[in-house]
Image (cartoon, rainbow, N blue to C red; front, side):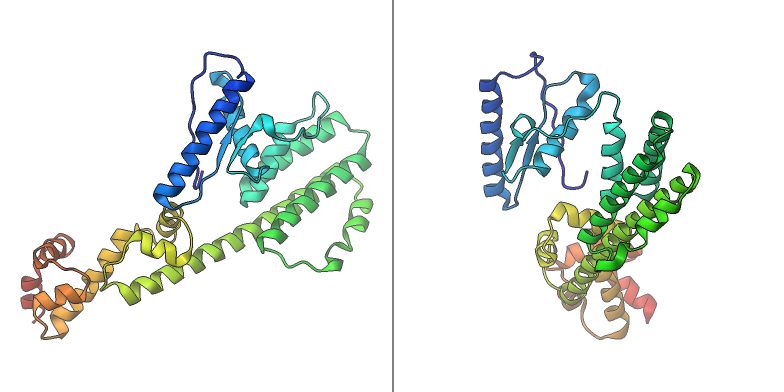
Length: 304
C-alpha cells in the first residue's frame, strides 16, 4: 500500500454506462491536475469496475492493473487491451497472487502461493508431468526476471544452462516441488535484499544530510527532495530503518548536540539554541526539558 490511497465510490448501477465512465475519467484527470499543481507531486489514478461490496478487492486489483498497464495519468480497466483468456477452472487468482508476492520479494507469501499452485497442477493434471515441468520453469524464469530487473541478480548468458537438464532428470513431483519452491524463493530473497540495500542507502544519505544540517531549519520535504522520493514514502522508510520518525530523530540529534555543548563549552544557552537549529530560546528550553527531564541551565549545573 505504499504511496497508494484507496477510494471506494458507491454506485446504484451494476455497471457504468459509457457516458458515466467518461465522466468519472474526466473528473479523475482534473483531480490529478489539481493535486499535481498544488503539491508538485506526480499522481496516477486507476479505476476499477463496479462490483458488489463483497468483491471490492476485485475492483481494487483492476484499478492497480489499469495503472500498471497504462502510460497515462488516469486509466480505467475497461480501456485496457483485452488480455489472455483462461480455461474456466484455471486458478488465475493464485497465479496473480504468486506473481504479486514474487514482485514484492515476499518470501513467505511466495512459498504459500507457489505450493497452492503446484497442488492445483498435480491434482488436476497428475498424468502430465512434462506440462507441469514447463509451467514450473515458466514461473521460475518469471521470478528471476523480476530479480534481474530489480538489480537483485546479475544476468549472464549461461546463468540457466543447467535448468533443462535438472528439470528433465527430476522423476517425482516431490522433487519438482522442492526445486520449484527453492528457485522462486531464492529469486524473492534477491529482490528483498536489493530493496533493503536501496532503502538503507537512501536513509544513510538522509542521516548524513541531517548530521550536516541539523543546525539549520530543515524539514521533511527538504530531505525528501534530497533523496528524490516522496515525503510519504520517505517517512515510511525512515521509520522502518531507524525506529523513529523524522522529527523524533532530528530532535534527538539536536538535543544530543546541545547536551554536549552545555557540558563541554562556555557558549551561552541562547547561542547553543541557535547552534542546534532552534530560533526561540524558550521553545528550545521546553523541548530540552521534555526530552531530558531538566532545563538546559539545570543540565549544565549538573554536568559541571
